[in-house]
Length: 265
Length: 248
Image (cartoon, rainbow over all chains, first blue to last red; front, top):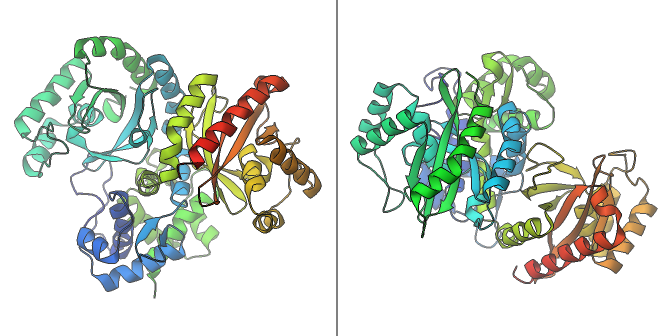
């Protein structure tokens, strides 16, 4: 039910054991998290099943979220869904995050140069979250949305981030985590993922074929700050009929150029 | 009954939405009229959960990456946005311009999507940005498509202060602009929101007769100065808006 798992690849060091930590805030925000993972509105019973929270607790939390404007309750079905106010949270991040601001024009240009879906993702716990996503000429709706979360080890950007992390820490995470597949092509064997990460460390980019989304191939390069990966820049293309070597030689120079422009050593 | 600690934490996030730049614990305490120790607990929790991050590891906070998450649940289940996205991509390609989708929220329009062009005027993502509806092409297109009483409600709640020196600031001038939109089927503004920028827009009305939002094509003022060219762009958004409306 935690919003984040405890193994983190971003630099947060705060503890949930600290007396300042308010678990009711975590529980409330886990309701928004559950709705982001859902393909539609959810009833209290459904939210209870996902979050592990009791229905009376959820009644209190959803009432607060409705009052603050982030959720609404459908009158007929009594199910909850996020409102347009959630866009304000996105804006408050995008408008103040200097890195996200700096990256946007580079992504716009990368999309124009390649005509493909492009994205910027940052690590959060054991996931990658998309900050910017721009659809290519044949982009589909799902691939245009910011805020989507992908398990770090199944994402091309995520493997780039892991390639610059402490190897022991990455091994520890992969060997202890339950590696659930997202598609029939997702690699779930820790050894194979580790060798993919090692390859990425050597060549400086990662290619992920259909592991995070069926039908899609992604190529990513890390964006670094003082030799740590703080984000990944990716290009996504339909995999059908694609010659992978052609794809890599076509997109890699442009992705490397953006990654160099955004990295600070 | 509601959750007090959660409400206070959401108020902290709200404080960031209502101000600019990074904030310290003291700043938030003053903005929210709370004690510093109470705000400290909210901020510590929000930081732990990724909703706040420290700027340059200092004492000033900015919204964190977890703030990107809740919007995904809203956008991915938005059938209107889903239907409109291929049209936005197509318009942007055909006219080598940016194509946006907005919705009306109170007296503001809010950006939900942008397909950019290479010559972005604004070098930042506009998602979630709000502007007064009365000064924007999309806002006026939405107002023109609304029922009279609903429109009057928005107009009477609107502040007629200037967004730029070119913004229309009287009810009469806005009313005239709305009448023009009803005739031509599309809206037009030049430099009323941002200097150097112009746009044309059209409202999307669903099969239930409700106004869902608007799409706009925007770019440099020069691209819209020629009336024939403006008319081509205006008609293109009008047609796309009709096609989208037929599906929702």
